[in-house]
Length: 82
Image (cartoon, rainbow, N blue to C red):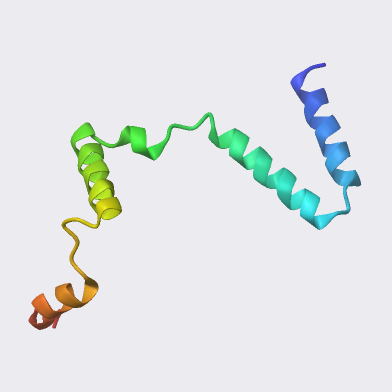
């Protein structure tokens, strides 16, 4: 069976499905499979940026080096764009 025959068979199968939830699930599965062949954005980041992000995630998990939104807003209150 060649690629065109396989595609045609899939089209026929999908055309027979009337269950919306099943179609949604099939759509998700196919989209996820297609994405497997695409490069991940993470791999395209420079290693120093990856390391900084990893460090930040560890800080978040350990609740270390965190600054609350309120603290940031107080500190930069007068920095509004005019």
